Length: 110
Image (cartoon, rainbow, N blue to C red; front, side, top):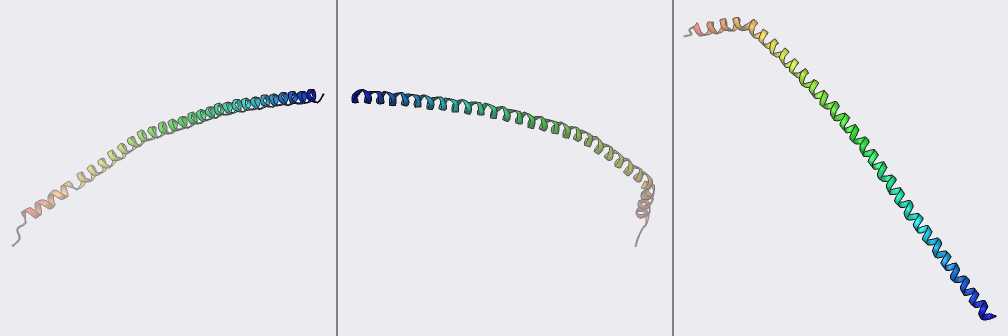
């Protein structure tokens, strides 16, 4: 009986070891599946964040490009106004300048 009892105990130990190995393998597979799922979720989040940042960048780029066009038009208008102002000033004093030049050119100093 001792030998059959030992044999039975050994069989139980082997069965318990196989069951434990089976549980460990299932846990390992579940862990790997969860890691794979987490990686996929993280990749989706990164892609969504990247798309959001790209959209925001494109919006700001378009906004600043539109502003630069408006700035160019504003600067052109300001420049034209300044040119007109300078031309009118030159027109107003051109006669006086011509008279002053004639006076200095025609005056003889000893």
